[in-house]
Length: 279
Image 1 (cartoon, rainbow, N blue to C red):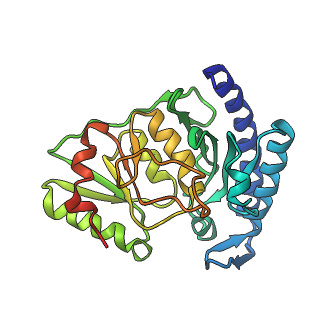
Image 2: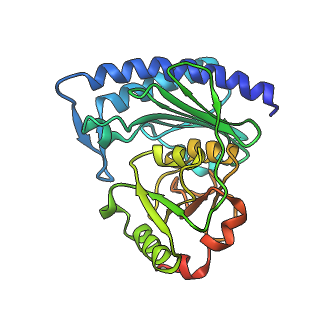
């Protein structure tokens, strides 16, 4: 897929997320948010379901030949998915708990996967009116309040100040926290900052952190758009075998344990067995 085609896709995705953002703000401003529990114990709201329907309907109309996987829809079996050369992978409302808690840190995430790899990612934070977007062949960008976009780049590692970034919910990330403890105990001048949802990936992409480990499994839609943006900004997202994380490879839709690394030259440092051999 060439850059012109990717930019045409981007134009449509911008329209989708801006309209979806208006819908999401309407739900956010309601006094009472209807919350239910899914079979995996996670929360789902009316807003999740409404955005799922809105985004899928738009994509199906504009791109009828491209399949869709969404967090809030039935996942086709691998036998069917394995035939796809490209598909949309969406998280209509990433950070549902942040949305319920009336925080700003929830987003609309849309990625285009081609041959098992994310080639385009868009993450929109409606309350912040901030959008991150990009891909490995496009570069990555940040846009505030519909103003001119700015290029974002990952940072080069400075051993005098290593910054690791992780989730705010430490109780749900025990293996990740063990990795971070080993990292801080071993490498001097290592600082940990914590943010919820997709913003932590975006901050790494724009040069505010060096390493984002994730050893507690998440679904592929939690990673896809972020990986595209990080790769477009010059970083890498690798599994424990130091391979680029691929999508749609297994019956399960879970992503492997992974490490988002700002400076690819430092992958051997952060993927040292001392850090990664956590049971």
